[in-house]
Image (cartoon, one colour):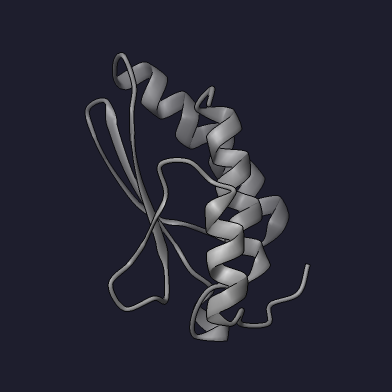
Length: 98
């Protein structure tokens, strides 16, 4: 998948297809907070997401506190959002059951 930075129109169109993701104030990343029943479910989500990210060679910025996982996606080498970010967001939504 290409690592070409998307323009604002493309970002808006792709973001409209995602639920619960928000564009960061600077327009260079998308964010979502995932809430799970417990730490075990949060960790399982992170494990599935990490394996998918590794296969894509595209890794999230994230943190975990107990049952909450905060995720920020962007493509550092492109200086903003690319199709990779939206593809990983979709996979993470599926792993979270949504």
